[in-house]
Amino acid sequence: MHPLSEVSLYLHIPFCQRKCPYCDFNTYAGREGRYAAFAAALAADIEREGLRRGRPPAPTIFLGGGTPTVLAPAQLTQILQAVGRGFAIEPGAEITSEANPGTVDQSRFETLRRLGVNRLSMGVQSFDDDELGFLGRIHNADEPGRAMALARQAGFANINLDLMFGLPGQRPEIWQRTLDRAIGLEPEHLSLYSLTVEPDTPLAAWVSRGQVAEPDPDLAADLYEMACETLAAAGYEHYEISNWARGPLQADGLPRFACRHNLVYWRNGPYLGFGPGAHSSLEGRRWSVGRSVEDYIAGVAAGAAPIDYEETLSPALAMGETMMLGLRLLGVGVGRADFQARFDVDLAEVYADTLDPLRVQGLIEISAARLRLTQRAWLLGNQVFAAFLPDAA
Figure (tube, rainbow, N blue to C red):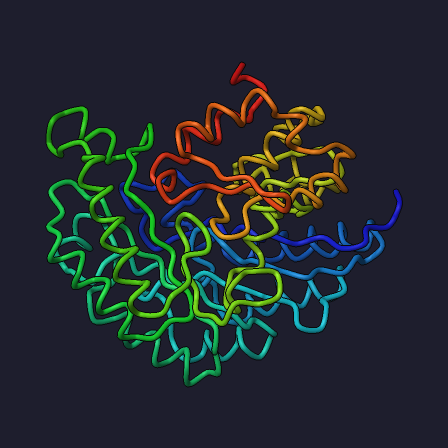
């Protein structure tokens, strides 16, 4: 196994205090008795895999879930110290932890900061108590402000807030108030997601029984456009379809507080995932870990985390996914020189038959340097992305 030049890390903490009805992530509530065994298994898995690969540098690390902050400070310490033993954490590495405003306190924030975590991503979703109740969140509209204050006191200078729009019957004035309150907390980054009805979730059951209306895509589009205008006026750079960050713009055309870990995904770069259900993509292969917490703990104890899916990417699929992911970056898009260096061919040559129809429809613009979406395409991204995937033909 040859050494890696660098690889980003995703650590999946599959626990929540309560699972939200819209969520289809691999998370579990009511498993507090397994936190310690899981933390020990995750730490062992990370350290062993890192050493097996020659302790490669990690430029970004992301603790997601689930809710990492349900773990005790000692368990978070155990996990992050294992990262440092298995991987070379680069100076200036971006290390993010997700956090729920309802499960944080000063001790957890101080522990995370002491261990090198320098970015927080808080799942706020709304500043309206009725909406929070519908979404099954465990915090109220005032707790994000308290959590932000605690995080700032602990030394965090890079904080993201997640917000959700397109709820059934959502009133524009309530959404505007949520945007205004979020901006008032002065986060460095904001991620906005439209509510989707995922199969096999309580929300899907409510919709199928007629208890809850289907989310209205026209309403969601109007609320998205409202957010674009509001956040631009507040000085946020809209750098990715669902993401805004404070500037100034850097040499690469991205704002200073753009999420560097997610940029690895959008640039189709290498990453290793640890924990039940985590995905990895490395050197033309991708795979995922089995979703069961108990199988994960047992597998690590036996020598390796259980893999439930694996594939080798064809060149056509690797190129198509690089286009699909890169086009999410609104200002910079897909660099033609980067694509040429990676695949030894010009993207305009590979996609000659694809580009002209999209250009005629006003959905893309192409220059000597890059290909990117037009503003008209921001709400039609999936239509554009599908055109670059091998199945599209």
